[in-house]
Length: 96
Ligand code: SF4
Ligand code: SF4
Image 1 (cartoon, protein in one colour):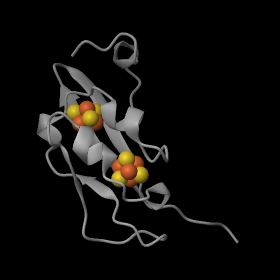
Image 2 (cartoon, rainbow, N blue to C red):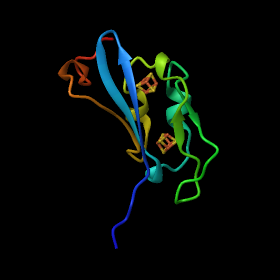
Image 3 (tube, helix red, strand yellow):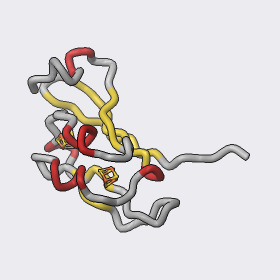
Image 4 (cartoon, rainbow, N blue to C red):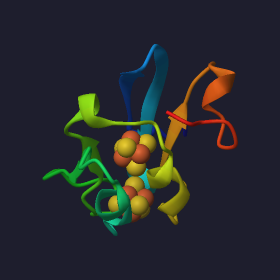
């Protein structure tokens, strides 16, 4: 049987750069680290349950996101990350 995965993908634009905040909802353990450590209050835990019975985050304020990747850095489950073809958004080079 093929397992399906609930994925949310939210477009974020910042100073001419474009990226997506990707949330693999079913990998989330609902710890809230991404919500707490986001410096711009972009994320919030949703009211819905994932397959494990946890509340995954959702992107509440995409216009506030500065593409800093802190949410990705702090997530212990690798459930949230930034996706972009823009090479200037790599961890080392991002100065947005
Ligand atoms: S990339 Fe930075 S600003 Fe955007 S949601 Fe993640 S922690 Fe918040
Ligand atoms: S840090 Fe990761 S595991 Fe924790 S709530 Fe955010 S997405 Fe879920």
